[in-house]
Image (cartoon, rainbow over all chains, first blue to last red):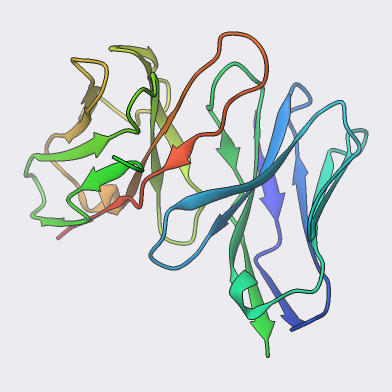
Amino acid sequence: GEDVEQSLFLSVREGDSSVINCTYTDSSSTYLYWYKQEPGAGLQLLTYIFSNMDMKQDQRLTVLLNKKDKHLSLRIADTQTGDSAIYFCAENAGGYQKVTFGIGTKLQVIP
Amino acid sequence: GAGVSQTPSNKVTEKGKYVELRCDPISGHTALYWYRQSLGQGPEFLIYFQGTGAADDSGLPNDRFFAVRPEGSVSTLKIQRTERGDSAVYLCASSSYREQGPNTEAFFGQGTRLTVV
């Protein structure tokens, strides 16, 4: 079955790097995503990685994928207070957006 | 509109009542999705529409839940005989689906918070 796991909480100081980790179980996953959810706001797609990639970088965001271990991480460089939110790891097997989400990691950025 | 619009933003209803939740997708998006997010959880897939038809309704929890999209644009999620366990945020998303190639991004609305008392 499909299952996505991630830690519940992460606290970092402003300016430091944040690393949010995720493990998934569906080996047929084609796409893996990171979504951001701020209080009272909808889900926002931050970035995604195709399963045949190991790494993707987009400005302050770096996604690393270890397909063998089914491990995905999101690194946010120079974390800002505006990065405080819940970050969801998600996967799907392609075709359409029937996405399986993790429980979400709450990132707290301390000024 | 500019984004996915969901109405109402909040709905409080009594146990046993019927509710309808509405989603206006981004204009031109053929794919529409409903998800449910319970407190402290990630969103869970409910149903996917491609045009007017429900291509995948495997996430609907039971036959009290039903969704329609009669003209391939606006969708309504209908819940009969509501129970307290139905309390959650119901999220709608839309995307411009491509049959081949990478998924296009699904844009989420802000959700309808349903509270069953």
